[in-house]
Length: 259
Image 1: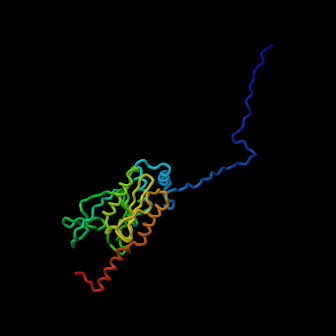
Image 2: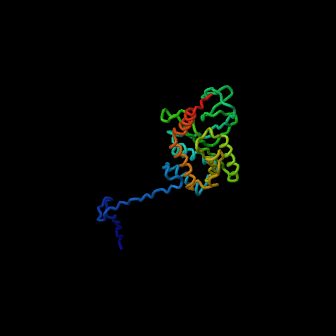
Image 3: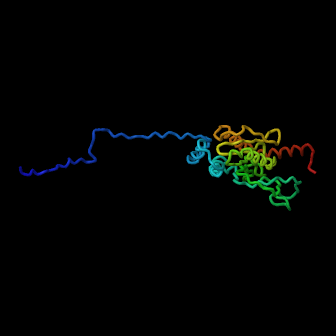
């Protein structure tokens, strides 16, 4: 038989734009809101929220992993600079028990030094991880021109076995602050990994009490105490020192003149 020529026919051409009878379907992705675990009302940026929220399942291994996010939370979103100043590694000097003189406390008076709270201090120095202060005399906004008031002191550690030593450190630093540097209420917070212990002054004395023992920072009580000190600060902004001045005026009216 003779050879039969082999011919391959290409498939018919079809345009990619070939019309179809099927209607186009647009898929809308449903974005579920991210569940916020730590202080949801703070409206933190999503990366910061996720970082702190991750501590619930994966506690930070070192205190150095806590400093950055905690500073961003305190300084950038919780205690804004219109009323507060957050001081990382703040210099805390022991209160000078010596008798004050008539010199201006804005500068060193001889051998006597004063801190930003207007208190005479010694050369004994401590450096708490964070101090949150409320400052007064902000360009006539307040009714006074006094000094910063300490509201929160925070110490952070890495190892859970150091919890009692850290708690003692917070307590000692609160004692060193002294009642002249805070008004009405102050918090001391010891923090290890994702747990914290909150100390608060007893309103009937100058002593400090442990409010809840060691609790998770995701326990609502932890943020509630921070919110409480914030609310107190806002409500008394400019009134605390003014109240002290009113008491002095009452004494003068009673005839007890300064000697």
